[in-house]
Image (tube, rainbow, N blue to C red; front, side):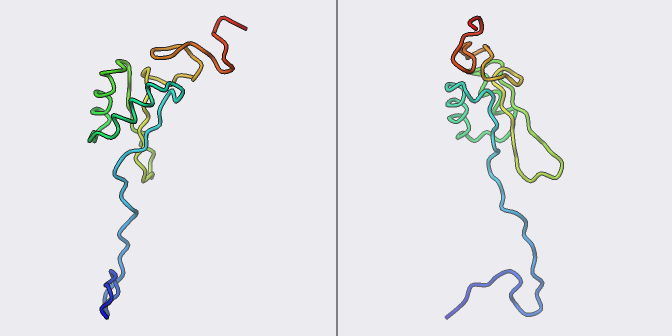
Length: 113
């Protein structure tokens, strides 16, 4: 019975580390997560073959004109992580903004205490 060869299993060979598994799609960190229409649209668009932050940003701006996509880019990190901001910057989930409903955490509108 023939056995499959493993890299480095032949006499005189040296085993080689081939590196970590290759990540094919970036991890997307969405803001705000509470905006269901934004999250749904990003998840739909993420299935397309968009290989750069600029391409994803352009596609998102068809529905969310202020959307911004930025790579995380931490030194020494093997993961590809992109931050996706609906309003071009970090937005708290309770803050009224484009696409938001103005309701704060706890279900109160900004003017009702």
